[in-house]
Length: 70
Image 1 (tube, one colour):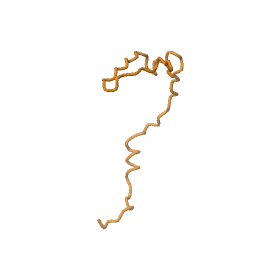
Image 2 (spheres, one colour; image 1 turned 30 degrees about the vertical axis):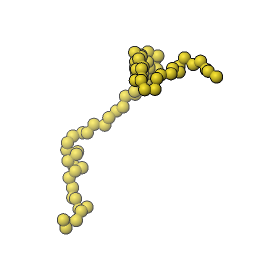
Image 3 (spheres, one colour; image 1 turned 90 degrees about the vertical axis):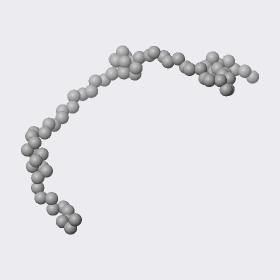
Image 4 (cartoon, one colour; image 1 turned 30 degrees about the horizontal axis):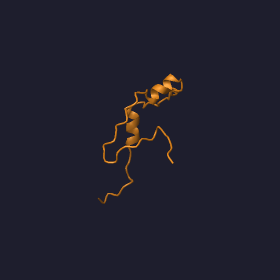
């Protein structure tokens, strides 16, 4: 019983395979833009560091969390 399916092609076993041609389609991003499916990101507010002095205050202090035995 033989079925006809154009997607199936028999190739010789010990011959190099035929290279499938590359389709020159648009990228996924281009497709999303073309179909109006690309949703822009909402702006995100980033909290800025006020100054280096704030970091200095956080980093200064007593480091009594370790032993002096070393």
